[in-house]
Length: 309
Image (cartoon, rainbow, N blue to C red; front, side):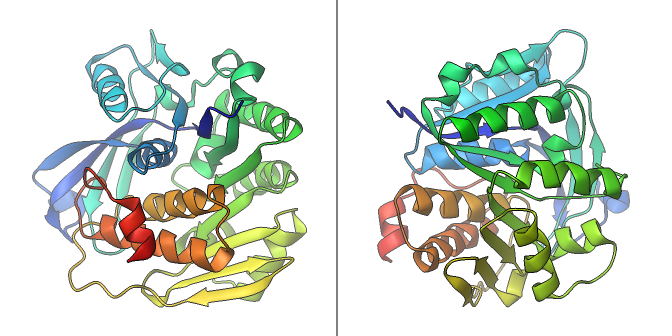
């Protein structure tokens, strides 16, 4: 019985997002606190779209951890796999508010302390999608836990997913990162990555053909490359290439989390058995809503209106 739509595994943290738009961290005076972490955003977004989501993550036994737990429960995210660490404090990231790719400074502690006992086989078997991120795979014990549990998820028939949100600030060893990604992609996950992610991972600009060939050769059938204002390209081994222009937005208020909103929309559409083109459209509509809101997606999103509108 599939009672969970998405199991999202990885970093939960606090984003302190700058109050001033397009101002460097060095010049930002005030920050606002938000629940953050890419897998966390996907779990919360999914719940807001009416899906059943479970977050597998670790935070501190502290005030920020209390805030995280309270926010997740308020958003109807399953927190039965949330671990509260006794000795490591909750991870935090300071982020500039930007209409482009934000600047950030990470302070990582509890987020990578994800252990195998947090996600039992019985829990995995109740889900449809197992999702994680490059950020989450960057440190042990979370890395080993995710690789082992994702293998079990594949054996139990789940569709895997990954956001390759690579950053050398988080994972300085590119060779190691590529090796770990090779392991994860061997189980054919849905892959989401941006042009910025690719530039950071390869340390140089690569062509779309190179990017798609590289990740297809690692085992991924469906690869979604987001290009900001230049739209989205999806390469599928079976169905070919799809391109969609970006939705025009008059005023971008905050780009933080837009990629997570996009990918939540894409996974939502895939769960609903939508075509790749329909999935991209729904994903772009959700990302556009996020770009026009600071911090998180707004309450009471009418997903049916988004799909039909």
